[in-house]
Image (tube, helix red, strand yellow):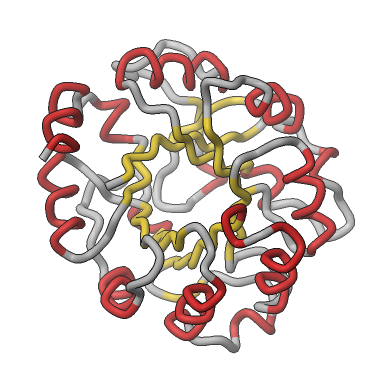
Amino acid sequence: MRIIPVLDLLSGKVVQGIGGQRSNYQPIKDSVITDSSDPITVMEAFYRQLKLDLFYIADLDSIQRKDTDSIKDHPNYPHVVEIVKNPQFKVMIDCGCQTIDDITHVLSLGVDHVVLGTETIDSPIVLDQAVQAFGAEKIILSVDFQDGKLLANSERMKEISPTKLAKHAETLGIKAIIVLELQKVGSQSGPLNQHLIDIASQIKAIPVYAGGGVRSIQDLAILKENNIEGALIATAFHKGTMKKEEIEEFLSK
């Protein structure tokens, strides 16, 4: 089981994700982990207090950018560059890549894995192109849902079955598949949903990670029982409902 702290970046700050309503996201506060919303400071606090070194970063400004904008045009870019220079952190990052050129640029920064979200990639072909160009180990697919429906900006992405896309990713041998239910982000309502169960039940050769809703170590045990091998977590850490000792005991079993 991979336990992966999440940093949602907006306007250069780590923000509290709530149900995918990004216009309402505000810099984190009242966190038991840190009193800062600076990305590097937050990552260092996670590493120091929880001994976790693999991070999922969502560059929300880039994810929401207009088609004519570059990833470099947004305020999180300098922070991303700084983060990937730090050798103590491993980073998977969603910069809202749409094309193979976007993926090329993100990986050139030195990130460990680029996350390709159904919300932003132009078509399923981009997944194949990325694997061919950079190797399957560098690529993570995020199957994104909002209110139970596949989240996709591209008409070509809207036409594909989420399960079919996940099975195709499995045949490519990519690093992992994230099933991200944005409505559950920050909700602490529990991580299981039908899309996650359906995809995890059919994917055997590569890990499936859950995104959204994790509250406790008990939720991680439920995920493990459902063949889900990782979880993206933020709110439970900031609220202190998952602690280092619990994590260590769970991972030791």
